[in-house]
Length: 448
Ligand code: PEP
Ligand code: CO
Image (tube, rainbow, N blue to C red):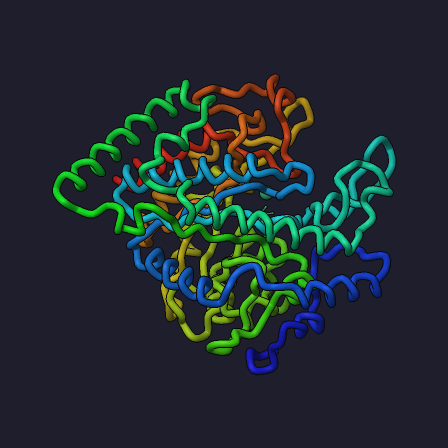
């Protein structure tokens, strides 16, 4: 399929992996038809601005912080949980900007991050085989055959939840909450008492002083929009192609197709086949796109994906997200970085230190060690330095809540504590303290 033959439905002629089994195809078509009539969640102009911001990242002039839930939940959905997630991402961005002096492009795995690819299509629970959990956009998470029946009405539920999430995110980031003069208020009570929280308070006080100094010099801080609001972008894995198709719209001003379900979309490590429907779908939308690359990715994959997804060599259009595992990144990433160098454009390289470092704790909980997460980031920075490639960002699964899902960090979550507050709908997330701790360490790597 060439770009000329592309339309939002043309992925249907290609093999699409990781799609749920919808028991009633007519009901699915009906839901997709209704979605296609609903307003877009993001706008073409915003998406173009994000591509420009990512071009700065590709050029070594900015750093991408991409973070949020593994899977958003229909149950844990409230103003408080959105605010807490935003708050920890803003705190991390302050630490990175202040600590490393680099502008940070802030992006949430939010307002659309519902669908999950799975390694196995079924799981065995109490001796019974049931479909694996693929996210609340598909079915319920309870471990029963009834809950795991795919229900197309959930696509509409996910859309409406994304719309209200987006609305609150826009209000928070443009309406005063993200104002730099509020920087102290982002520190939550349970974080404040910790070493990371105290360190954050010191940075916040220094920022206050710098702002007072500028005001005393006669700079009109009120007129500086960049101090009072932030650009916050959304992203998710473009996994359920019917949903993405329904939200893909032609730009009424300048033409071109935009997937208006989120600003940036990525294709997962399990669905990045060159001839597959996911890559085929993303070739035709003008959003910036990303591809996750795990241990099976080859140098040829990088070249072919690069040429396929960015044939016009548009700066900022394509990001590769490496997720190799701490033990293997030093061996596996350098050939991919070298292959990226052969493209007619500079891709953004981002490190996902989460998905290659997951294991089962003795309690049976899926978890990750903070030290492995940091080791992979260090491996990423050193591979980038050796290959003379800008380490463009990090991709983190986190929550603003005080969960016990990942082991270690400065408050040293132990495997015996995983059950205390293990709340994730899918993969284990860093809690707010572990996330801040990570930001200090990444700022240090960036400084060096
Ligand atoms: C994810 O980001 O949640 C995910 C499933 O990633 P990957 O495709 O890298 O496994
Ligand atoms: Co995940």
